[in-house]
Image (cartoon, rainbow, N blue to C red; front, side, top):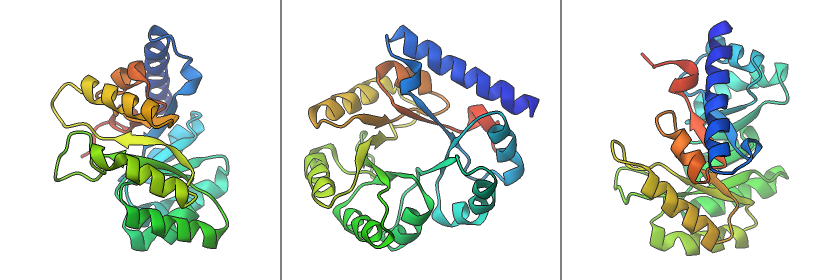
Length: 220
């Protein structure tokens, strides 16, 4: 518990410092604790320390461990940050409060259908393949206007844009391009920045940072 509290306090302090340096209100940044591969015993201390927003990569993993945790803590919010198959849209809409990996028209259609069926609207972040990397999800920068239009036409709540910059290079130019794209398309949210670079992301305008290792420690 003490470990979890200390890590959470440190990350929050770093976010606040980066935001204030950039002339931003730290309250405008949502910290998503990336709990993928973590068991309930690792998650519970962070919840006890006050963390209320968590991120998972896979629908099935989240479905196995979160219902019980959320029953005990109904104010917890769950975000899907990993790639989503269209055939999992119904499950994702039922389980998550936000989906950060909407990257193609077929998924837009599947999510719109699932939301209509469930009678609930789940916030959506449109994922951009900002480094044009073939191994990563996300739409091409050139395809983003059409994807935004498709999502809005389908009635998806477009909460923002999301990206994963290339590894082992300076992320700031990629974050700056994301901020520019968000302004150009009138999108408020920016889901960008992880344990190694979330302070840079906050300085450039991130509204949601996805932090795992800095909160849970290095994975085995």
